[in-house]
Image (tube, rainbow, N blue to C red):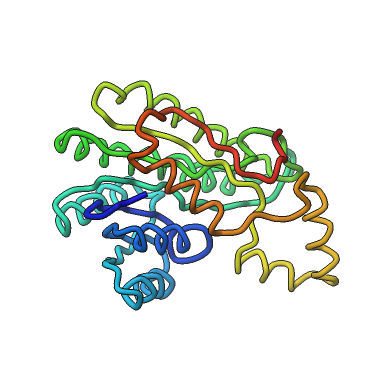
Length: 252
């Protein structure tokens, strides 16, 4: 995979899977635009990329705001003249069942996890059509493919993102805009590690989480990032509307 001279925007790239994806795109030659709601975390990602000789830019913005989504895309194009790849990675998780999920938490989940990718894609597509094509990769979840306990709103949002992926893939195939989704299972990130450390027995909790996977372990950030890069690469140019499960066999 070679992304030399490609301009890639990754939302939620201040940490976790988003950060690793940004770093790996840069390692493959891309000009990377990092988006996050935290300037500190986003600039940390940019510094890492630049420290390894890559080219990166940080744009602050909350993807749940349509106006912010439009501004982010315009700033990418202003800085680099185009946008070749959009990775809709930003997302939130609010635990709960139907009976105990608050309306504001449900609305916030949909705003970030569905409206964010919708509006970023809306404005990215307008630019991609001008330049003759592009790629959008939506980061969904295994929760969009199967029921996960206490993840009602999250599952709804990720299922909707899969449907959005398929709709856009059909709508823009003739204009050389490919749209795919990656559905990670539970992945070991710094954020997960911090949550585990707050539990009474972190090691036991990690073991239990791992044993629930057919492969007997959690995913690694770089494994998910590789799937995202693959969905966006020229070598996979015949793939659009595809839903890539990378969950250790959980949805097999």
